[in-house]
Image (tube, rainbow, N blue to C red; front, side, top):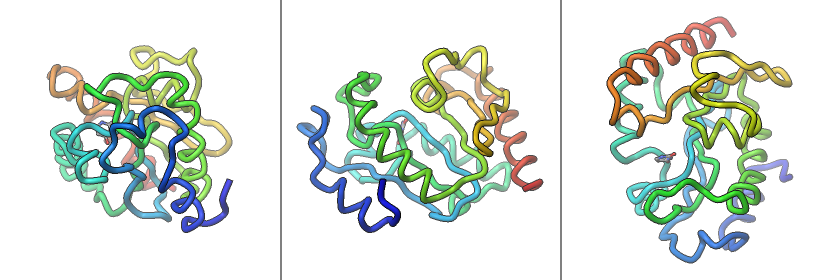
Length: 184
Ligand code: URA
């Protein structure tokens, strides 16, 4: 673990710890406020993110931005990162060996940001951060507190593009996040 951003960022530049490095255009490290009270964690970069090197800039990200805007949460208030930092081709779910090595970078980012709240976007984020016994359908919308961090599992924004009901639930979950954010 690195105790500063510079060393952590340097350590990842030429990462080839898993096969995802072979097809990447950019490592999508993470973006936002490094002292944020709240962190959002997704699955992994898609094509747009791989092209730009920034998380959640594609369709799913734009939808998430709209929800955040509607609730009055600014992207500058957040830190956003993913379980894996290189794009799995065809947007497949990252394989276990890929997420297992990459998540150490993410854990280091969490250690440096020290968020009070972490929003887990979808099943991959939930299972990799809290454990494989957690299921997104059972846990979404319910706080999990661990080591003084409040975790809110919710739908991945890409799932909202396919299902209107999930949009309503996502909005409700973020509203609850906003409520707690104002408390702390
Ligand atoms: N989906 C994710 O999980 N992360 C991104 O950065 C973009 C899409």
